[in-house]
Length: 335
Image (cartoon, rainbow, N blue to C red; front, side):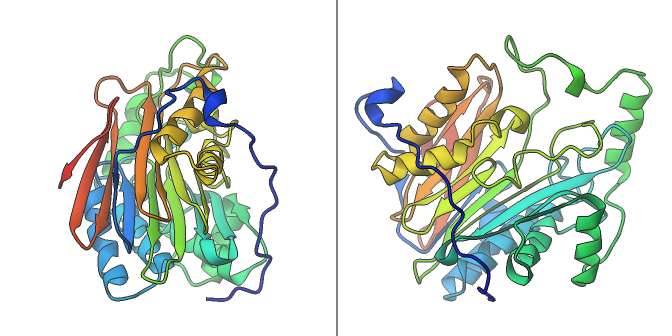
């Protein structure tokens, strides 16, 4: 992989400590796995992990593993929240956001509001490897993808077209014009795919991909491609990925917050809880979750707003897939 671009994105360290979060004094965690490993969010996590695992088991790169994992979800024909056939925007077009981090060089690549290209995470990887940029958006991101050899094609399928036609027939405005969610979050669920992998050489990679918000205003970019919002990682600490109401979550860089708390020694679950509590303490009533895993294999997650089932993530290592439900207390079992 080309690593000629700058290696570190400067950011101010978060000074929060366990004493300052107002959460439980005793740290806790939901589990630990030995490396190599890959973590992927939501119900498609087990299948995505199984797609990525042969790369890791064969001594391959965590970067390739994360790309394989997320490509698996992006190309699912019946997945409404990620990739091809996903949620349309206000004018019926599906657009994609994605980002990827390579831990050893702290190098990033991302695309926002990408149009007519299915494998958004792979385009994000090209941004990282082939340019000095971190984020390219909109039609220019599509032009960049074509320049890199990607096929330009429609992202609409029968399901996404029917969903838009049904909504458009109501003649209502997108809910993006609603008041900020200070009393209740009325958005439909979000199934952003986030993956974190550590390979046999100890190298970290973190990535995520999504269609974003249903019937969003054209041009909207969510939290997924913003470093520290939808995903974050540090080679010496671990990684975190987020899912949920990105328009709220991106204002607080919750995955950056999670990883920085982990750097200070806080277990992943408690760190994720603290990052979400920072948002709810400001009065937001939203749905969102964070899954995190340390470079040492400790993992955990937290969620708010999904009281009817929460969300899940899965962790794959040599012992198999472990499914973790975060609702509200994580419970793991083989899956």
